[in-house]
Image (cartoon, rainbow over the protein chains, first blue to last red):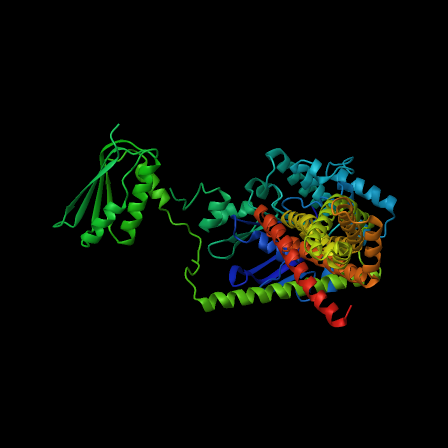
Length: 257
Length: 376
């Protein structure tokens, strides 16, 4: 593991809102280079909205999202585009482009932003797909893959350009336990072998405890971040009933009925 | 099986209402309404407690729960306490569960709004739609500029696929509709011209109408329903599947990648389809005139040739290019605006077709007006 204490991503006083409806306010946290960082919280608490702000899909109501000393939402459009090339994103559904084959999906970012020849791109596509266990699936269309395979193909596309930071939106959602575990292992391999920084948005406890180096808990009731740290430490030391409730699936503290 | 019933007894000195529940409470049968109890609240406003007794209850299902929940809510609103006596195990817990407040903050929407508020909301919604449309048009113009400058990411494979879908695949439908429009024009013209013995002018009517406007309008309407709807559905599903987000996060402008090839394919194919529709319409009119209206085929063709001027052809082609832009913009815009749900895709598709057809009719009127002023 190559976790260093140098933050690659810092969030300062971030407020998230849809028009006048504030979803989260005053978020402050940082993600260290080479760690697996989990954004956790109950359904509808604003995890995916936060992710959208982090990856440049939605403007924050206020606050800063700083990548290596550059505030993403303060720089001009051209610079934002440059910063985007440093991200890889695996969406909840995989979000593979349905009109392209799996190979073309992975190849597209390489065609756009690398200086590789078509033959080299082909090799690179095969490499990335092999890393996620899909070597040989290049010519299939997304509709011909299972849910788990689509997510893995999406991951291959997300890491096509060797991004500094890879974002995962609910990676285990809709997967059987074995496929979910395989994806967790892939995330850890990505951190250990490639040195990528991983930011995962999830509420799957098994994944959280298996992969997270650090995590934050978004509280839907208080509309802000109420806990930060390693999930196992949070479980052992946190006094916040909502955090304990979440991390024990409601088996401890303050559960009604 | 005893029918479901309630017996009410009001003790005015103690301000207590007793509700005796008895019989079989089944969804399939008629069950008492809670309004009977509520009437007691109106006639005896001093009631502070309701005792519900189920000692005579024999069988029950959700109909009883529904009754009790409604009663409990009414009592809650009126600050009346409820006591449950002799109820089967679980009924009280189920009532309590269904009355549990959800923690989320739900702001109720104003139920009745004044006319002015509604009018203002409509105005701002319309203003927002216009701004979104202008923004989208601006993005398309920028994307085309980048394409001309060779800086846009443009997949020619996609373009040729869209050319085929907008062109060759639509030929059957365009043929049928245009042929029939020609036939209809010939019949309608014949009915009037026959009165003056001037049936030969059917050739002029069919030729000019098809070439100048009807060929383009009919092709536009066909393509709105066929291609515009398909563009909206495709992009809508891509939006729902986060595919468009995925383009944005790798720094690809979705307008360049998705809209430009569709727009160009339609703008290229619409004039060609319109020419084809013109031909089919004239053919329809010719076939009917020669076979059923007893006109001389050669004379008919000569009349058509003399009547249809090159200006008419240009006007028709300008119509078709404008319609191509309208259909592609409406289809793609509605698809990109689509909400992330299956209902959203349906709404986007419907909206794309309705907007495109309305815009086509408006554009036809504007072009006709301009041509009138210019004397074309």
